[in-house]
Image (cartoon, rainbow, N blue to C red):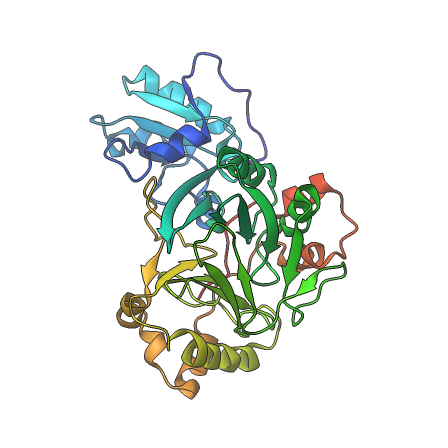
Length: 371
């Protein structure tokens, strides 16, 4: 990784990370040029980027298309500013991503849909691939898996005249800081967590088959299902019998990794049984809304990241494996662990001595909670 970055040029046209998020997945999507070193890009990048290190850009200019706008990307916006100056001088329509990947890691957007009369808002933290949810009816809302920027959820609730009355986490997160405890405190909402994961602060323990009802006459309820596997206390929530907030138990293209607690075989067996006994028994048309998405998932503005259980059954071959074959597959499917995951887990348990600024630095990077 380069440790020396010159100051940002004042003549370079800028684009904010929030503006870029609105363009990705549309016909106006720009050509993304990441000018960091290959190992930096391999560790964490915006999906679909083309990598040309800054030092190689001049000789590799023919790789950059001239028929569409270009957005230059780096870690903090400095190397990419230099690249943008080069490209602008060569006649390209180019903008620099202000704040680079650091800014991208803090961008949120939303998509909404209706389930049995209630509105569900999927809150996407684009740079982390984190998905959280607000379920609102009448004048109340529940929040599931909030990220650390809790004012995002409070603002969304205020826009819709909702009071946040309950906050949930589907599991003890390892790849990002949970905002559940802080959102609960600021909203004066009850905090609901699984007693099978470890938390060193007060909360209300979620029980299997427990139902939480929203007002407004919509008859919507959220039912908790204990689904150990990714973590010992992983939970999914069924909304009105039509949709599942699946946490890290199952994603739109894979399943949750069972190896982060150093008990991979035991957790893989638990995950297989949870999937077979509690998730895959639901109707094929059940919508699946996970807590994360990977770099291969195309995110489109205003369209939720979701799939159906029926589609998952045909697109994820591991779901059809018997228990022994599933355990063997899970053990062989090794991916890098989330950066700083041990310290992030400690923070989410309530055990970290680090301050907010230090913790924010820890979670910079991608999510790595799927196989």
